[in-house]
Image (cartoon, rainbow, N blue to C red; front, side):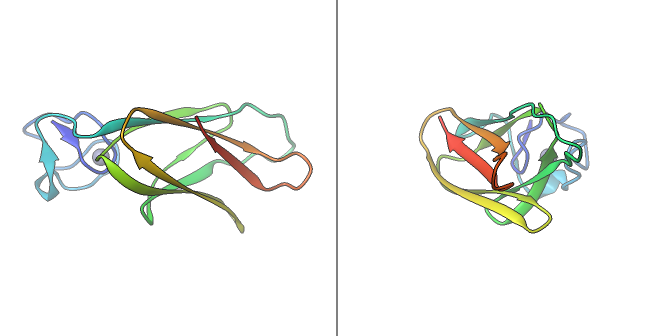
Length: 118
Ligand SMILES: [Zn+2]
């Protein structure tokens, strides 16, 4: 089965998702529905380079560290993907009708979070 929150594969007898901790009974499907959103964070060298939190449709799901990547199986349709670190935020609206990817990085000059949909 696949967790509907984070898309992780979970055993059919599991009670909680081992990745995001959501209860299995909350809604798991036998097959992944929708498409895969891949998020890549560009590797950058800064003195401080904390993980960036990823919120999907307003709910914090996970965070991504420097140079890291994550994959999420999401239902088809519109989603708000928000990247957040301290006071810095960047929201991206996507309409998921195919596998998509988002590249995240810090803007070296403004210090803001940049996110581009590919
Ligand atoms: Zn999960």
